[in-house]
Image (cartoon, rainbow over all chains, first blue to last red; front, side, top):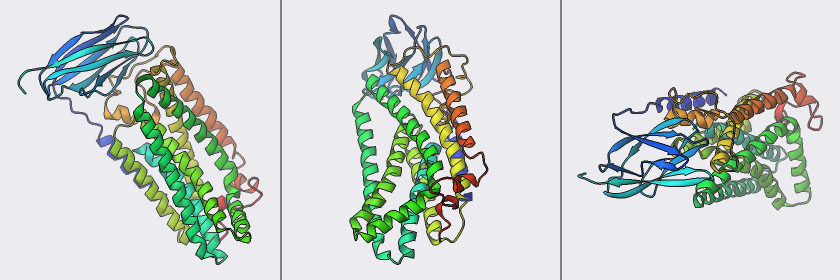
Length: 119
Length: 289
């Protein structure tokens, strides 16, 4: 039992020390979900650029934003009427990528992420 | 990490107890040569559990979007049901499990069937193993880090294995009843969180549409995308803006199940061991050495 307590405490400490997130300054992109889908239709970023996506939801139900293919952006669920933000690092290779806005059971729209310029 | 640690420590110690009872009894009746069959059974049970876990994982990777959310949400609900049932079952049956297992060993040996010994170990351990797999899978869908999750699971099993060795050699007393009580409460908290998360998954799957208003929003305090948010989401089902249905289900489950669980032993600590499980007045199956 003491062993278990020690192990559990260690696990908790590890988890909590890992909780600090780096809050580096990054360009903010506003994304809005309405009943017509997501806007803007396209965003532009430099290769590897760090962006802060601020997602608001003007609909009456949840929606999710998630990266597709080469765009690594872990699913974020935005509850109805709420605003959420998360960091997104643009892919390193120039090209077109996709962020998908998904309103469960209703519709999904896509935001084109155009990565261009010097890396 | 804490999620997987709690699950594997609890389930692992149940497995360790079963194996200890089997081996301890064989040792006592001078049948140590049959240890091999017990270990075959345990190995087969481990293989089955890992296989089922791999199957669930592969299935979930094949799926995406709505179907994945539906799959995850329903697995979480199923895991909560099994977990809750298991905790109550354990409390009722555990006192008698030692004599039951010994009886099965006697039967197997009298029939001269060593395969039956392996089968006995397989079925007793396999059930615990499948439970472990199910809970780990249900809890892994929203974890903050794969590495930490695996590490927690391994650590929990290591603790359980250590406890098993101590139990077998009888070199120290392990306060099992306290461990079972504390871990049961911890698992109920995990289960309540899984319930709330399951509702969110089913909403993402568009199987549930309206979960009611969201009375508060603590996103600015602990963001869902932060590590702290993800950690609390896995352990406590934290949601920065939970819907009323999630809140009601979380607290309803927790209060109802905890009350029922604690009331079941309201006659004091001795009652569970004297009135149930075949009338064997033994504290958690280990006084027979």
